[in-house]
Image 1: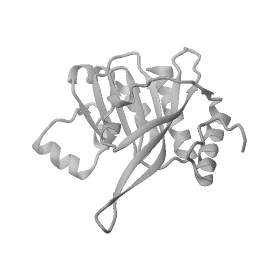
Image 2: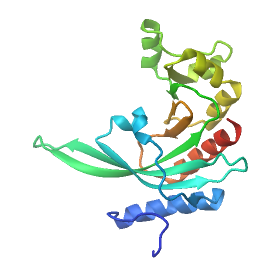
Image 3: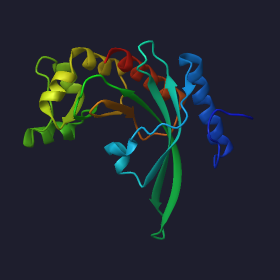
Length: 207
């Protein structure tokens, strides 16, 4: 494969094939465009702060008629796993994340599927934002915020419906003020990338 539209430095053949399959699926459905260098301020997000290391390998824009483009990010993640002899082995993984800019300031928000542990913890430490008029959403998702007023206004019924429509069992949405990112720590796969692209495209067009 010559002239591939992404950085192949350091990739093995299997990784190149996976990245190319993901790129092609996105290109076919959304006509993505290479962005060039953009600083998305990824270090502001907690989902990346706990990693041993990460870097943005490539980014692509999903063009919108309202000019509020959404973005697909190919992220290289460094991991350290403990070996039997007590030492550590460094490995790299490649993940897909999606990003959108929001018109309204949400404050800091994290949304993920709610677990039994979350439900028990909430009884002891009620720090979650619940929506009394939308129990199906509150029962399904764990919403942590730093500004209840901002978040309760911004996370309106339409936004909650967009999240509910995602119907994905393992993802994290994190919002820092006007910037939303969504993904998970699983390796890149084109079906997940399409799922995330659909979501941020909807968010960019509506919110």
